[in-house]
Length: 361
Image (cartoon, rainbow, N blue to C red; front, side, top):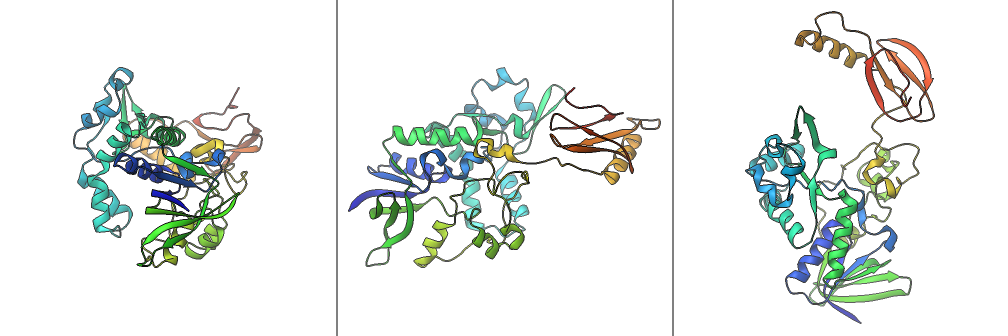
């Protein structure tokens, strides 16, 4: 029988943070059980942009996370707005239509900045400005989306690698290919361990505490169809194929109550050329944000009208041409309601300007 102080199920951002915290706070024997093989480790953290949303009253409060940033980015703090407790909590209330848990949401926001600083200090997670994700240059200054200024260096890939490096350095055992199939209970009904299936068979691991750092079911077609609907059931997944909802099912099997929103999800468009799962090496760059054909009649009219009224253009606006194309496929160029011509392009991008040209030339 294998005994541990703390058993952590999963190996993404939340799970490894929990394992490191347990070790920091005195747990001698901590194990992380990762269902995936080593080459697929890390859950959906690997696919993420690694941006860390947290509350702060003064932009300069984030300075310790980004040493030397003022030498790299001119007038860095001038483009940052404060993102207070009320701002963060208000955003949670807005995007959930007031349905967010009133207690847990306040705990989340109140501890958000301290948690990110702890990740940096104890987890050895190096940070960087989220320039390519949320920063927009305006003149000589970068304007940042509110609350979205800092990310883990090298995004989700760097975040995951850093957590694993810290966990291993702290002596935390990590087992790969270890699929947890059930939560064990003692005579009082308390969680006392887990049942694990790996290449050697099935074994019981016992522990003083069990932490479920898993549970997402986005890779489970049956659960997506049941809880979100048939259209999402048939969706492609940008993320790990190992998130099958195991943690949720195991918890409910011993009496946990379903909670939160089961009928919605975070979704992003990805290329129809991928298989059921987007390529791991593309991480969040598997998004597909431009399309083969596009007709922007209303947008074109609004743009022309807005530019005239703003005084940017006081004469007839030159023809605006929108090129929306995809590598290696025929494309169409539209101006107003008239198709101008067909052409092939060597690169994947979009262009808006006077006349027409072949991209990549």
